[in-house]
Amino acid sequence: MLRHRILSAAVLVLTAWTGAVVMAQPPRDAGAKMRGEFGGTNRSANRSMRHAYDYSRDYRMYSQDVRTISPQTAKAHAEGVGNNIAQAKKDFSQVRKEPGLDKQTLADLDQIDKHLEAAAKVHSNLHEMCMKDNIDAAGSMKCCDDINSELAKALALHDKLMKRLTGGTGAKK
Image (cartoon, rainbow, N blue to C red; front, top):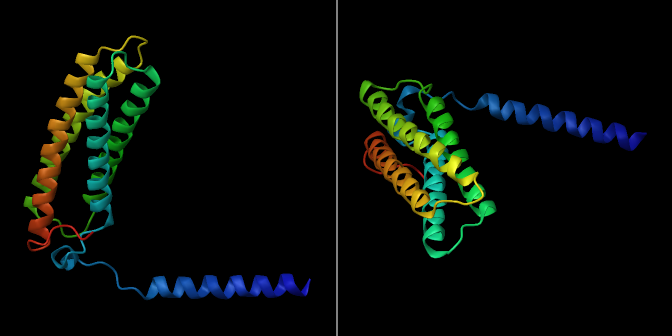
């Protein structure tokens, strides 16, 4: 019983201390992006775009190298592409909520969104192909090429945006 009370008291103290530390941190201000603090959500969006690109690239190479595409492999890669595109879109919607975004940043985000939307549309074709028992290798490779073309454009725009926002240093890793 005594051990339980001591443990409960320790948890209570730790919880209070953690809350105090979080509350003591200054809120992010509009100048945060200029200091290279333009956030974890941007890094997450970038990572999701790169992962989608990698899934698509790897699936394209697989489709080129094998005689018969495994439906299980096709589905897994198509899901990886789609999940990462969806996550990038979700992350960029959060980025739009950052304080102090200027018109140029919003315009850049609009362009990135257009490329992600185009990649998502092509992905829906790829996903449909990958749900079949006999998968069209040439069609899959074309979809992957188109997806990666759009993702490469979105990544280039995002890299350019981050360099502008961080004074040429790019996103903090």
